[in-house]
Image (cartoon, rainbow, N blue to C red; front, side):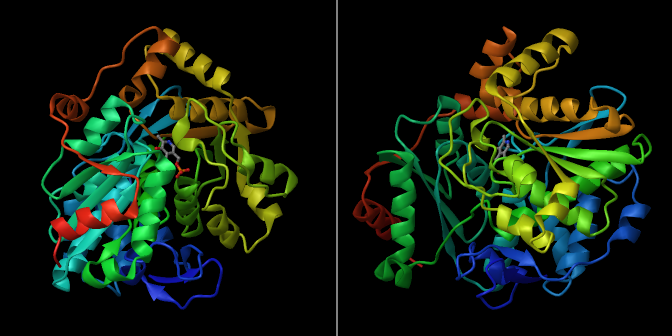
Length: 438
Ligand SMILES: *Cc1c(COP(=O)(O)O)cnc(C)c1O
C-alpha cells in the first residue's frame, strides 16, 4: 500500500512505515495513493463468508507488497477473535453491530489490527516499542485491550484522575502485564500535553522507541473498511439496489473507511454522515464552508469533535470537489433530545437497547428514509458501542438497565492497578526510565 500525506509535502511511504509514524512529517494524514478495483472479490462474496475471510482477502489485495499471504493470514487471525453481527430493525433497516470486541466498541477493529501488525513488524525487526496514549476515557480502552500481551510492545496510558467513569477506569487499569496505567493529577489536556512533550524529548527518544496508536493511523483506518464489505456480503440478498450506510460520526474515520471501500468498488448508493450538534461536516455539505470550532459536550460524547481530522482524507477522495462529496455524502444532525427520545422509543416499541451514538445513527437514517425521494432505499446503520458502555444514559432514556456483556463484567470485578503521577513531563520521564530499558 503506497501512502502519501494529505498535505503533499512528505515523501511516499508504505503501510509498515506509516504504522510507526501516525501523522506524516508535514502534519497531514496518510492516504492510499492508488485505487484498486476489488469488484471481483465483492461480487464473489455472500453471507457464507465470515469476517476473517473478508479481512484476509482485502489485506491480501492491499498488503501483498509488504507481507506474504501466510503472514497476512496470521496477522488477521491474531487480530480478530470477534466479528461484527448484522441484525434488522425493519425489512429495510439493518444494524451492523460493531461492539462485540474486547472493549465493546467499534474502535476494537482498528486497534486490534494495528496491534497485530505492529507486533509482527517488531518481531521481524527484533526491536521493541512503547505506545504512549492519552485518553479522556473511552478511546484508551480499545488500545489497552488490543495491545494486551502483545510481544515486544508496552503500552503506557495516561488518564485524568477522577474524570473517567468507573467502568472506563476499570477497563484501563485492570489488564496488567504490558499495559501500564498512569493516573494523572490533572485534566485530559495535561495528559495530552505530557505525551506530546515526551515525543519531543530528545534524551528520552534516544533511549526508548516511543510511538502512538492514534485513531488517525492508517493501520486503524484500513481494517475499518472490512466491515462495510462484510455487511454487504451478509445482507446482499436482502438489500435493494439502493442502499445507504449511515455512520454516527465524530472524527470521521469510520465514514472515511467506508468511502474507501466504495472507491474500491463496493456498490453503495450513498453515505449518511450522522452527527450530534457538533455538525461541522453536515454544515459543510450544505454550504461548502468548513468552519471548525470548539466542540460542545453531548450525550454521544465520543462524537464531540469540533475539528474532524479525517475531513482532509474525505476531501482527497473527491479531489477537493465539495459538490461531488455532497452528492455521495448526506449530512443529518441529531440533538440530545432526539437521541434520548429514540432510545426510549426503541426500547418501548421493540425492547431494544441502543447506546446514544447508535441512536444518533438510527434517527438520522430514519429521517433520510422517510423522505419521499428515498422511498425504495434500504439503510445499514453502524452501531458503534454496546449500550452497557453508556449505562447511565441508557437507564435515564429507557427506565431500564441493559444486560452487561461478560468482558465488561469481568473488568468490573478486577482490582484497579495504576501509578499516580503529577501532570509534568518529569514524572512521565521518570516512570519510563525506571520501567523500560530498550
Ligand atoms: C469514536 C466513536 C465514534 C466516532 O467515530 P469517528 O471515526 O471518530 O467518526 C462513534 N461512536 C463511538 C461509540 C465511538 O467510540
